[in-house]
Image 1 (cartoon, rainbow, N blue to C red):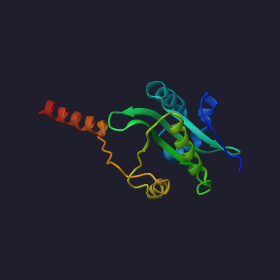
Image 2: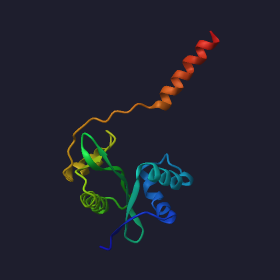
Image 3: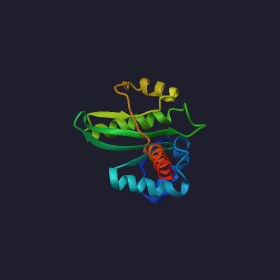
Image 4: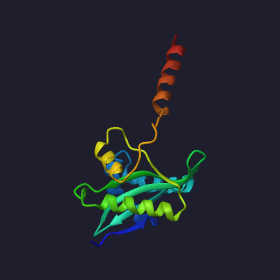
Length: 158
């Protein structure tokens, strides 16, 4: 196999990752992808790694950070293999690269958040010897803001 893994640094390299990333993040439009990746990179150290073998086959979005609770860690935010190319080992190779990259950067752990409904992904992560260690909670402030706005509108019209 002729797989190679790179960090996407140039605008063209980042854009080349879009088609595969859009399979996992379809809400991100092509015309905003580069801007969002650049902004997240500047603000929080987000990086894109991609596996290529005659085209991009898998993409990972990640950042290295540190928590009081966990020390230094690599957080995998996005990990996706191209449809039609899954079960060929590309995701596993890229995951293993992320583990090695974390070690090279003195990380103590790898963290990854996965939607509850992504059972195939969960099997993959468990096969990679990841542990389920926590519940992840979120609060959608966009919905909360809409609800509060509606309450204010009703109170003003009363």
